[in-house]
Length: 364
Image (cartoon, helix red, strand yellow):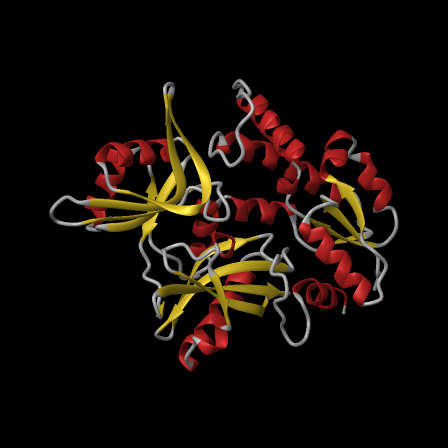
């Protein structure tokens, strides 16, 4: 098998640094990197790199702000809308246009790879695109019989969200932006019979003279005032938000936890528990890692393995996938699939980190 790896990504990003480190430790040649911005400007550069037998992997474009701006501009062009002024760091806005630009790029990449049969593709661009669309991805998983939280549907605004809760007889639900990642724009919403409401979220609401804006923040916010809740949910609805039933997570001490499970070649490999004192357990929000095996009883461990493998089979063109899973009382549900979920520094499985293991399992 070829030992040559070509990556479309950002050479200065953490993912590529860990990839190169793993290859050096394994005695392999460094990966050859084509920057996203260079490929967008001159796609033929990839034809040259893949003219000889190679393994190809695409990494996310998010590490390069110039690429993000290009994808947004392309999406606005496709949608016939004006490109917004420069967004501030972490601002939650125009995610639909950004996704349209990403779609344009990923589908072009897929067409290009189809003309390069000497390249073995580690992660199919179309499947990565599907996993970036959270709503479509959950519907795709459900269609393959994978247990997921019940979908309540798209959210058109605050009043529509309440109508969805009433229709389903619920007082708790999660609101998620369709194209968000890393808990971007996720809201854990609760209400009681007295009419009290609470929204815990990673989205920070900033009011200005011209209106209100949303920003991602590592520090969680909790909103209880009606005016804030109206504005928050209305703004998220503008980002093509949807709602799903609240799936309680098991407790460990004063926190709740779920699991990130990495699948390789359709089989579960690396896994770690993520414990947080709030509803979102994403590790970048300063939540804690914990050994998964220490929190799983035998029945729940078996369910975790079974459901992770079943979910991976729904994406046959993706060698490596990260799944967020709740496992408890012998059952497991997939909260999210992440096409780029292998950024788990220091996490080992059978003596190998995620980058070493994915390479060896792909080329063996």
